[in-house]
Image (cartoon, rainbow, N blue to C red; front, side, top):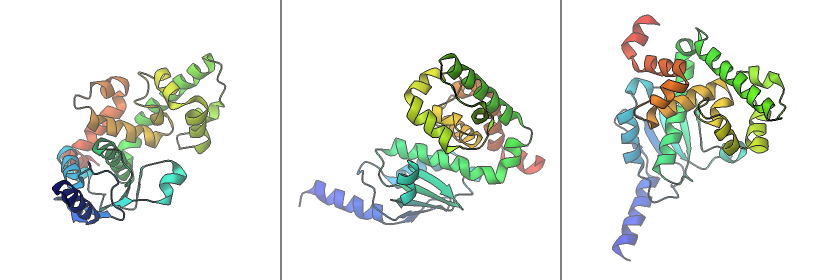
Length: 232
């Protein structure tokens, strides 16, 4: 067996083994990663180097593998009760990094929901963008019930309409400068999570600060653990 094949075999064995990150997150491989280019220990070091540890405190475990929810909901990751579930069918580390940050955002909502939503500023910003979106669609002859645009919660019928009937590529060009991505328009929770992800993907934050100033302010607030502890 060649050295290269031995190295690949060893890497797959390592990927099947669980480990703990320096912050104490347990990473467990239910199934091996299908890509040999992804190094989970390196990836988690990047995550913990970027995101303040107090914002990772709700994630106790990451399980990598194949789950029915991924196919049923057309997703690559989800967060539930302290555990972040990640698909083992990822193209590269960048895709997995994106998924981890997005689900970390969702882990923060139960803990910091009051800080995020109590003053209604984030909701009002989101609904203002939804109204703009509604007007754009109507101007193009795309008639959608206004009730969809006033609902803060995720609605599968509305998401299917955006994704399957209009298409995210078409929406992306229509919503440039309004939403970070088309998926951000699907619910208030996704508006926050996509903004949080964008914050950690774009190091200068200029784009997010310009198109979503209230969302940007909320993320900056979350970064300040002392202020969170003292004022809330």
